[in-house]
Amino acid sequence: MARRQVMFTFPPELVREPIIYLLGQQFKVIPNIRRADISENKGWVVLELEGEEKDIEAGIAWLTSKGIRVDPVTGDIMEG
Image (cartoon, rainbow, N blue to C red; front, top):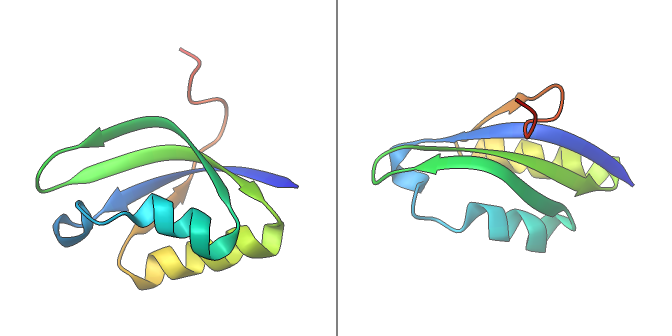
């Protein structure tokens, strides 16, 4: 199983959508939320994704197609 830490930045129209749930259901990816800041009109989430590399890649492609920015995170986000 592969693991990858990423940051999702949500556009206002997707803040209320169950994106992380759908990612886990549709792509067999286990999301582990590490940090988040969500308000009515903006949001970001840092999480660790675990699963097969092809499933993680497919999930990230789906997210970006929906307008979610996905950036890699290096190091352990819980440190410091």
